[in-house]
Length: 114
Image (cartoon, rainbow, N blue to C red; front, side):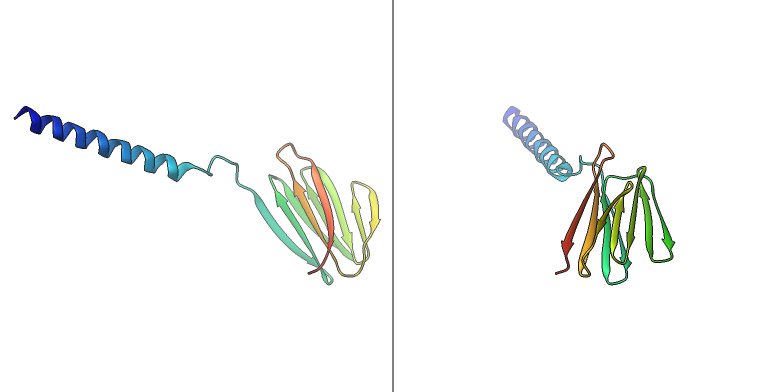
C-alpha cells in the first residue's frame, strides 16, 4: 500500500512541475513594456510614431502636421521636416519614422517609400 502512496505523490509532483513550466513559458516575452504605434499620412508620405510614449498630440496645420510626443515638437510638411526647431528638406517619396525610446528621446529616420 505504501508504494501506491509514493506513486501518487510522484505523479502529483510531476504534474505540479508541468504546470509551473507552462506558466513560466507563457510569461516569457511579456516583461517588456508595451509599445505604441501611430501612423499618419501627410500628402503622399507616411509619418509613423512608434515606441514607448505616454503623451502624443497631433495638430493639422495649413501644409502638414505638427506632432508633439514626450515634449519633442516634430513638424512635417510637404517638403520639410523639423525636429525641435532643426529643419531638414525632404524628398517627395520619403517617409518619416519617429521612435521614442524608454528614456524619452526621439530618434527620427527618413527613408524612401518602398
